[in-house]
Image (cartoon, rainbow, N blue to C red; front, side, top):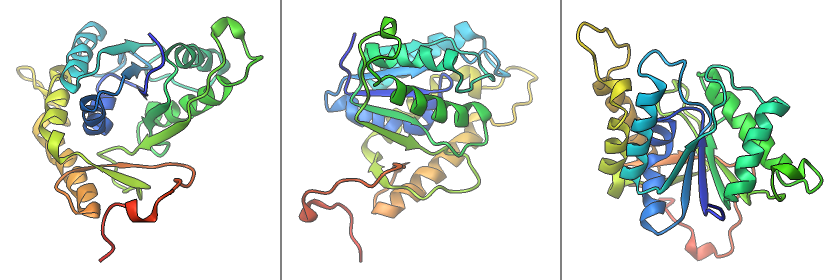
Length: 240
């Protein structure tokens, strides 16, 4: 499978659903070809086995309307932009050939999330070098990388733009709930972030992002470079 419109590349199963699930659902409904890529299998997490999380990832992708999802098998709690790990991502990018890549923001509390941001950026650049390791596939570089901030960080990141996800909010949360191993208490278990508490944090973040553009729920996005505007009258949102 190749020539995807979008690839959502995140550190762990459930990261994409949590940080960018609404935008994925919207783009999927528009008929865009989307690949979801988990860099790790989440094997170092405190809850759930890799097998359980893999099954949950399949269900999460199904709910969001995404036909293709894969895990690259990089080490959970050991992500770093080394040539060895970077080349795994280079191969995936050259094979999937996405026009746009969704990735986690570089300012993150979880070390893997911050590392994933750097790793994907580095791989996207190197993947476009024609003389670099042709055995990993034909050179290809995505046109755009856009970054999704965490929904639970104490410090809010100023967005470059916000996507209105009001119409798919329920779908996003259903996809998150598919990861029951991460949010449902087992008998006698003390969970630091049960689903009810997480839902409140996620909803607060989405409402604050939505408030920026005058809608109920939003997902914030960041770009490193300015966005190109070709029609001033097509600018969305109101100033006053």
